[in-house]
Length: 278
Image 1 (cartoon, rainbow, N blue to C red):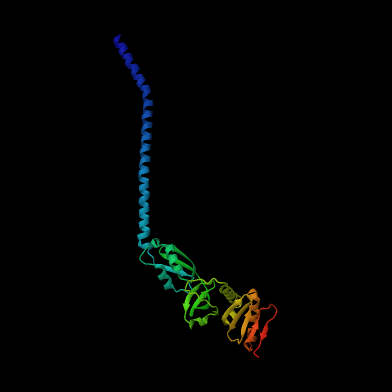
Image 2 (spheres, rainbow, N blue to C red; image 1 turned 30 degrees about the vertical axis):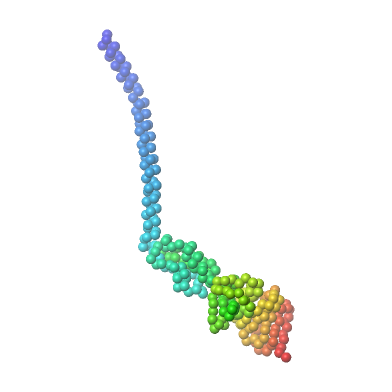
């Protein structure tokens, strides 16, 4: 009887253990899964930043120290008055460093110190080229300040100091300027601005007249005096109807070249008043 009871209890215990075992295994496996997932996430979180940092370091080293990206060419566009060597010297380009080590903004500012430069674009071109594109100021006339001859651009900036001999290639703005000026300064007064406006229109609309112009003097908006090559007298025009006056002047230039006169007044729209020597 005792043996039967012991055997029965052992059988019941085994049956109970057998029924509970699958549930326990599931819990154990679930815990193992979560633990493994946690380990993988932790490993990823630790290794990913290190990998990115390593890639960045390798990329930085490659870009800044590889011979493949060392400056080999400098392309310059738009320079008509500034020679190539002057631009390269101002940019301080070294042919021993990578294009990625060059500070483009600093280079741009250095080149812009040249008064001929109105605007500039600097860029890298892979694998080993620096491209510089210039927009230059256009010189249009000469002015004299304290017995010095300066070449002035269309926007009123003194771009270069010149000798008297070189000044014959440009018309001269006759104007008294007592203040000391230097290359790179801009002239803002009204008289100079009107003279530059007239010269710009003359250059664009009547290039024949511009090529023959010797001097221009603005007394006021209604009284502008011009001296021309091969003309004996003074040409008088008004700033307010400059285009009409210049067209009529260019039309009459051949006849005026063959005539000795004291002045021709084009300030009135529909007529030209000629004064002859008495």
